[in-house]
Length: 168
Image (tube, rainbow, N blue to C red):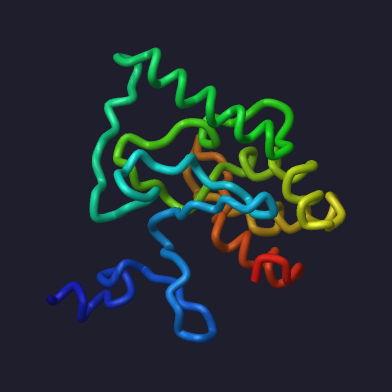
């Protein structure tokens, strides 16, 4: 109760609300974007019923101790990214789900940049250079050694929706 009074935004899930008072996401938990004109976050979590189901968070047991199933899941994620037009080396945060089942809304800058050509730019009908510049402008860094820059996927996709009314 005291936490809600002192930190109301955080205590209520750090929810992001659009201009019409609709909850569209959280600053703390990623969400599943499936349309080809959206940047993808970390793979959908292993929670039951729906991806990123906060009421059923828990480990998936897909770890190095279960290599065949883990590799099958990773191969499926790689296939899905390739089918969406993502080329080149795939950063691990695009193919590996977390142990908790609930992932942050951020991906590495590399994971965002690899999705620009041609996947997102082509699907949006936007110049690759413009989409790349948007990703770079949205990159954030922590003042901590060995922590790479990251991009908030929800924020990035909302900005793309403002540029291109297809998703908004």
